[in-house]
Image (tube, one colour):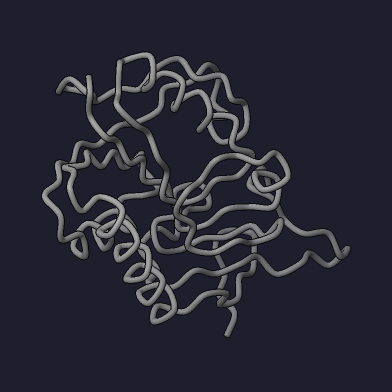
Length: 189
């Protein structure tokens, strides 16, 4: 089944039951690892909000949740790595165990900057849970402790991920169909 978003065609890539199964497995790992702790979940907006909501509903250890957004120089947040600051941090994270919640780790550059900033605030630990991790982040050995799915260079939408603001509300994850010239669409499409 294909669907159109703006100028691109997408086909189903990961169905909702596989997503929910993976979220339960990730939550089980986190519940085990943080059995004697009270982690602070920091979902990074906008893309992670659906994943974060479903994940946190499965967390059984005491926890706190606060949302943050990345402010960057220019507009290329996902790949520039030029983090200005995290906005939305209201409580002190000093001596806290923090779990960043990401929808997708693409190059990992911005994520590394966020981790550095959080460590600079005196956190006890910083780990990352991401629904998706792209090949580029794996090549660079970006430290993501909890990974839902490893994907290659697919351009994906749905379940919080968007194409120019559209598609976040889809219950499944879809990947772009190759263009007529055989090229794979990218986020810059």
